[in-house]
Image 1 (spheres, helix red, strand yellow):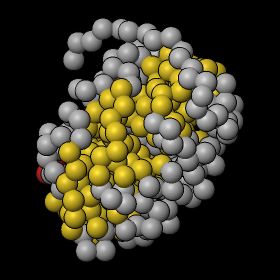
Image 2 (cartoon, helix red, strand yellow; image 1 turned 135 degrees about the vertical axis):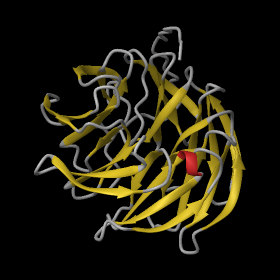
Image 3 (cartoon, helix red, strand yellow; image 1 turned 30 degrees about the horizontal axis):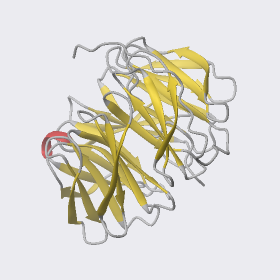
Image 4 (cartoon, helix red, strand yellow; image 1 turned 90 degrees about the horizontal axis):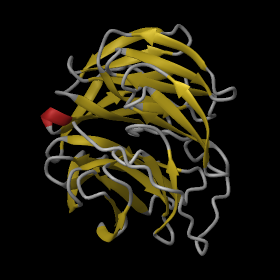
Length: 318
């Protein structure tokens, strides 16, 4: 898709809460084949790492020691050392991979194989594919439960979510959701799952014990990814075509507000402080930092060409 390069200056709103912790945010830049590493304490890019061709998906281990990047065009997986910020290895996999998630132990990485309708299970010790799991059509977003026992996969062209058992690696269920689900999130109790449905412009709220959709919530145009914040009381949804994020109250299942961010927002992740949310803006080549409590944008950080960052691009809150 054609786009213009637009770089925004850093904007700071001084009356909002401070960004307190200092892990890194890793942003894949699809246009220049790099990952921008943001120091979240200073709010500046600390380092730029060259990876494979057209990087899109990204996942960080819980301890921050490893970062995994899917490169759809070069059909490989880049592995970054979270301590040295050096590229450790690029592993050829031979498939177009988009979505990615790491299990809590860091021993496995789950990869969505877009064209072959399967999830690849990557062994991080052996550095090779350990299993292939058939799922629905065009799998995109993946998320792993906190105990590692369930893997949830959004199947875009099947309008469904596949549930994989973490031990047996067998598909144990499939749930119908909205049209073209892409980004996905699950709460810590494994009671609710949320999908951003690109084609139907809404979010499906799934009750996991019954495996039923209990609500369908309107968002902006082309919702892409989702993230939970503030003890999971709020859900942040990126709206690609509206240059905005929707903020949803997960208790009342009502829209709280719509906040303007950069141009064509895609990836979204919550800072470990559980207050600030980082939004990667593909067309404006930057990241918006939202204070989820005050609902104010507190920073805009220039990154690289075509920032996508699809996945958990920061350490999770534990």
